Length: 105
Length: 113
Image 1: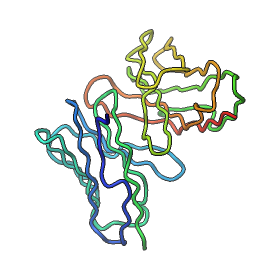
Image 2: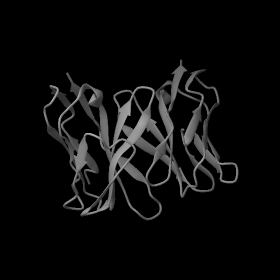
Image 3: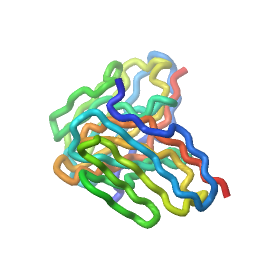
C-alpha cells in the first residue's frame, strides 16, 4: 500500500521542453510538498501547497484537493533541472518514490 | 542560521556495533523526524518527535531508538547495527503549525558490513 504515487518514475527531456510530473495521494492532507534532491543527495523544499497553484521562476505546482492530485511543471527545462523530484504529503510525511529527471542539452 | 545539521556524513560500522547519528536544528522547530532512504523505496519515516520529551514511532522503527531532551537536538541510535540498516539517513525539522515547511539535513550515508 502506498499512500503517495508519482509518475513517471523516470523522465528524459530535451533542453527547453515543458515537463510535467504527477502525484496522486490517498490520504487526507493538510499540505502537499514538492521536494528536489540533486545528485549528491541534499533535499530542498520547492513548494508547499494546500490549494490552487504556486509559481517560482520556471517551476509551477498545482493541486486539486477534490481529486487528490498534484502536478509539478517545469517550463523551458534546463540541464541544471536534472534531479529527483519527490512528492510528499502532510506533517508526518508520506513520500512518493520520486521522479528522476534528466534534461539533455 | 545553520538550519538542520547532521553528523557524521559518512560512517562504516560492523554488524553488531552501536552508534548515534546526531541531528540539530536552530530554527526552534517543534517537529523533528528521521528518515531512511533506500533505492526504489523512497524516504521512510523511522521516528519523529513533536516536542521535547515526546517521541513516537514511524513506519520503520525497529532497530532504532530516539530521544528528545531539548528542542534543538534529536539523536538517532542504532542499537546493534545490521546490514539491512545500510542506507542514507536524513533528519528533518518543521514547525508543527502551518505552513509546515520542512527542512532537511544533508544526510548520513551509513554502511554496515
